[in-house]
Image (cartoon, rainbow, N blue to C red; front, side, top):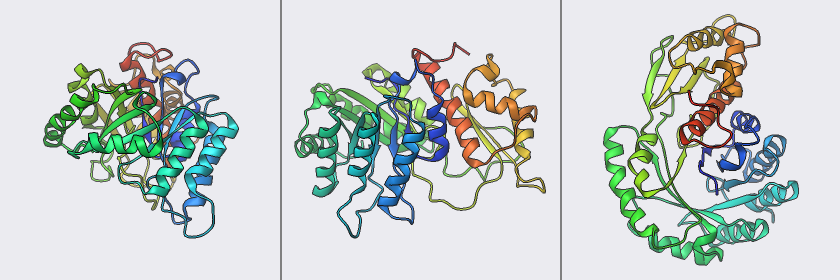
Length: 341
C-alpha cells in the first residue's frame, strides 16, 4: 500500500507532473483524483479525464477516482465513473473508486461495479465532523460489497485556513481514529488542504510564505500511524475556470509554501515568470540539489536563465506540483525520492 495519497483535481498540469514521477517512486504514491465538473457535461468530463490519464499516467500506477462532483447524466445509458473505470482497465491502470456516505444508490452501484472490475478495493471518504462516520462506513462497505481489509479509509478535514481550524480539526480526527483501529483497513489516511482558493490578495513581486496547516495536522496525528494526504499546491475545492492568472509559482518548503506572483501580465505576456523563477533559484529555500531535485525544478531553472519559453498557468501548476510531490516524498523518506535537501 502507498504511503502518500496526493489529492488532485485532474487538471492537465497535475497530470503533467504525475507523468514525470520517477519509476522507483511511483508505487509509493496513490493519487486520488477529484474529477472536476465543467459546463460540457459529465460524460464529456469523464472522457477528458480518461484521455489525460491515458496520455500521462506511469504504466501500472494505481490511482483512486472520485466522481462525486460530476452530476448524473440527464440522458443516455452511459455514466461517468463506469466509463473511466472501463478505460483505465483497458489501459492497464489499476483504479480504486471513491465512495461518499451520501452517494445515491445508482452511484454506489457504479462504485461497486468499478471496484469489482479492477479488484483493488475502494476508498471511503469520510468527513471527521460527522459523528456517525463509523456507522456510515459500515453502510458503505455493505453497499459496495467490500470488507475493511480491501478498503482505504480517508478522513478528509478539507480546508484548514488558520490555527483555529487546525485546533478544531485535530480532536475531531482523533475521535474517529479511535474506532478505526477496531477494523483491519487497508490503510487509514488523513487529508487536509491549506492553500487559499486564490493568491491574488498576496503582495506581488515578493516571496510570501503560507503555512502548511495540512502538514501540521498530520504531524500532530502521526502517533496513530496514519498515512498522509494533501491537496498538493491547490485549494481543496476544484477550480471553476475563469481567466488565466498572471504569472505565479507556488513552491513547497518545509512547513510553508512560498508564493510568487506578478502583479499582472505586461506587454510581453507571461514573460514575468522569468523574473519570478530567477528570484526563486536565488532564495534560501531553493533545494541544495537545485534543478536536479525534480522535473519541476529543472523547468524552473530553465526559465530562470531564459532558456525556455515562459509557459502558461498549466505549466506553472505542473512545475509546482512536481516539486511538491518530490518534496513530500523526501519528507516521508520514500524510495525513489530525491536525497535530503
